[in-house]
Image (cartoon, each protein chain N blue to C red):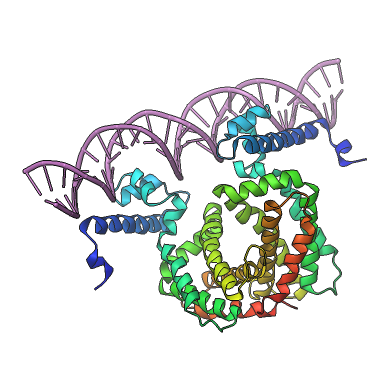
Length: 200
Length: 200
DNA sequence: AGACTAATGTCAGTGACTGACATTAGTTAA
DNA sequence: TTAACTAATGTCAGTCACTGACATTAGTCT
């Protein structure tokens, strides 16, 4: 049924190795800290060579966010799924809520990632420059398509995307600071609705 | 007269060393590329030990953006200089235009930095996560103060800041792609005015 | 001149990441 | 089943950003 069944043993093992690296890394990062954990230790814990880790991930930070790769595609699909006649801001809001929903469904892991992103400079930089920028690009492309404009010459798609990511960051910070039981989707929804209210 | 006169020989030499590092780095980066230039080469060119470079700058990327440190303070002052009764979006727009103006006055250097930020991942990450985020924080604080709200609970200051930085990025990209004679302030102004137009 | 100390130099690390090459182990066709 | 093929992994040596510890140089101040 699942695509897992359709994979050969080789690809299954490859996925297992990748998953083990992600999980062992998260465990070690949480237990000992990000900078205090070496890539050699992660590889050892996952029972592979250090070289193998760097064949699966380009950087140590990428291992920490390894479980977020599909999120960009999910965002892309969520944006494409919104009706064409819906206002752009609405479509973006709904699509970003899909991200928030995913965060809630992986609350434990995400809270570790967010806490590290708030505390460790290199993690913060990666989160901003790689993860969030990736999402931003999806929003820019979708918004530009909906408005029927060129995102290079027309600044509106990028501005909207930047506003949405800022809102998501606010919600993320509030969620990370508060109890894990808080509803991330609610927080994100509140923040996203404020986009309409920045004209004083 | 200038504060240069009031400095002792020691501090003057320290500033000279710092300036030499910044200038030699920019020269080498432009000539040979960022990744292709080692910190040892930069230090050699500036005629200091590699260790001295890392006493002046925390990372190789920081050397490239070394001439932008005061910009954050300039932005802070520009924000504080706006009249209290002015609408927040207006105040932010005017203050960010001060940044754009500074870019124009250092066009040659800034174009090198922007080109590298567009091409080299680690430079892009630094620009986003350190430089731009620093500016963003100034805008957030100023906007929150003007609105009389807490920037942790109220998402509007951060959303406005994110929108402004996005606008600045669009203008930066357009300026970097076009001729050096183009008016950056005009481009930035156009982009910033579009903040008011993201409600479809 | 001499005490004080900020800036720099020297040196020996650590750790992320890479290229080159060898080895293991699924896969696939004969 | 076996042999050829190749994707994934292992091994190893190396580069380079960055750091701690300690020595040295050179302004500064009395």
